Length: 284
Image 1 (cartoon, rainbow, N blue to C red):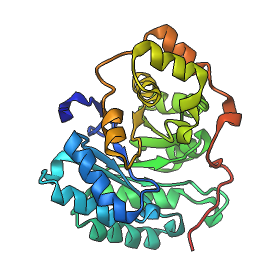
Image 2 (spheres, rainbow, N blue to C red):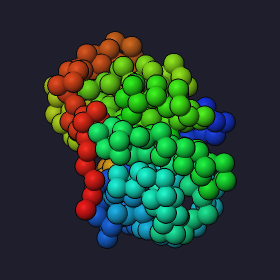
Image 3 (cartoon, rainbow, N blue to C red):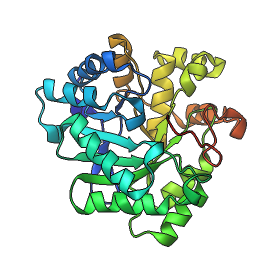
C-alpha cells in the first residue's frame, strides 16, 4: 500500500499531518522498534509516542533504520506529567530530542492539563512550547486531553492556538463538546483509544456493519473516525493488524451507517480513560 493513500489534514499553523498514524502506547520498548519498522514498511508516515511511554529512543531508532528521510515521517511526542514547570519542560524536551536523536519534532503536546496540580497553571507550560516552536525545534505544538475550559483559558492567556487536541474519542464516547470547540477554532482533533481499547469491536452494531461492508470491525470504526475528520493512530504489535488498520481508505460508510455508529455514544458513561478535570497522575 502506498503512503500517499493516507490523506493529510491541514493544521492551523500552515503545517499538515497524515490523518492515519501508528501509536506506540503500551508497546514495550523491546518491541517498539520492530513494530514501528513494520508500520513504516506498510506505508505509515505518522508515529505517535510520548515521554511517559518510555519508548521514544526506539521510535527514533526505527525511523533511522527505515531508510526514509526524516522529513518524510511525522513524529509526535508529549510532555511527561512530572515536568510541567517551565525549566523542567525545557529539559524534558531536550531529553526527548536526544533520546530520538532528532533535530526537531513535528508535533509536541502537553500530555494532560493537570488542573489540580502546579497551582492549575498549564499556561506557563504552554508558553514554553511556544518557545520550542519559535526556535524551530518543533514544527507544531498542541495539547492532549484538554477540555473546553482549558482551551478557553489558553485562548485568553496565550499567543498561539494549539494545532491539535488529542482526546479520548470512539463510538461509545464521541466527546462531541470538545470536538465541536476544536472544529470552531480550527484545532485538529486526534482520537486516542479510537476503538475503546477494543471494547467496541464486539458491539453488535459494529459487527453487523462490518459484515455488511466486508471489513473487520476495527476497520469500520477507524473509517468512521476518518469520515468524521478525526486524526487516528491505532496501536498493534501484530503485522497483520498493523496492515489491516492501514487499509481504510478504499471504502466509505454511507450517512445512515455513520449515524448508526454515532448512536452508540453513551456520553460520559462511555469514557474508558480518566477524566481530564480530575486526573492527577505523575510518574515516580
